[in-house]
Amino acid sequence: MTRIAIIGYATMMDPRNVRKYNLKPPETVTVQAFQRFFGLPDLADKDPKTVFDSKGKLLITDLGVTTTTINGSRFYNAVAYRDVPEEVVADLDELEKKSYFFRTPLAEAFVRTFPDRARWNSGGNGIYTYTAKNEANLADIGTVQLVRHDVSPNLDYLKRCREAAAIYGEPFRALYDKTTFLADRINSVIGI
Image 1 (tube, rainbow, N blue to C red):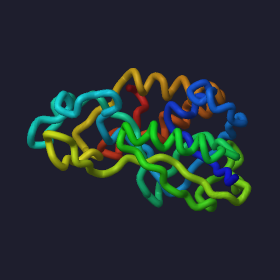
Image 2: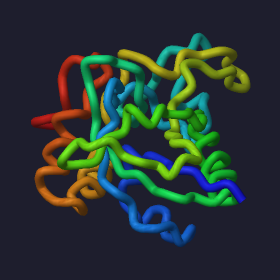
Image 3: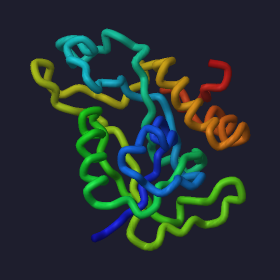
Image 4: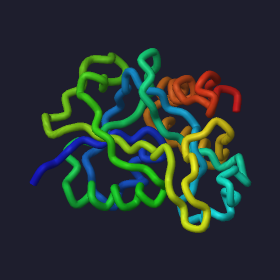
């Protein structure tokens, strides 16, 4: 059975959110050359017609959740779950798919330990994270842009992410704010 590493960069940083899987305790890491930002509306358990109009315009802008994108000058902090079994990965894939996220491979060279930033060793079976789809074909609406610049953070979600980061200490929580950006990808969430 193949086991992989999964990077959690939002609410998945809280091991209580994945306790049903009985995973090994996560390790704190940073992911280099990527940026975390509030760039898409949360569609989990929502009728897309309550979020988008018939032309794909957002009806509610404060539903933002985080995703990541390649950005050579940025990094973000996260946790790494090592040796995740295939059946857990399949379950996580299904769960994330409901929010229009898909599993994406990360090169091991991008993942560093926190706080010392040494190269993190996954054990050789691959490192993955979940990233939002840029667009999706939604029933009764058509193709809409999911990753956007006109969405603002869901404040409850931001609070849960901060609480998850705080589990690993104040320096890790402060780094979460410093390395988490608004949809403009310029301004961090510090002060929100």
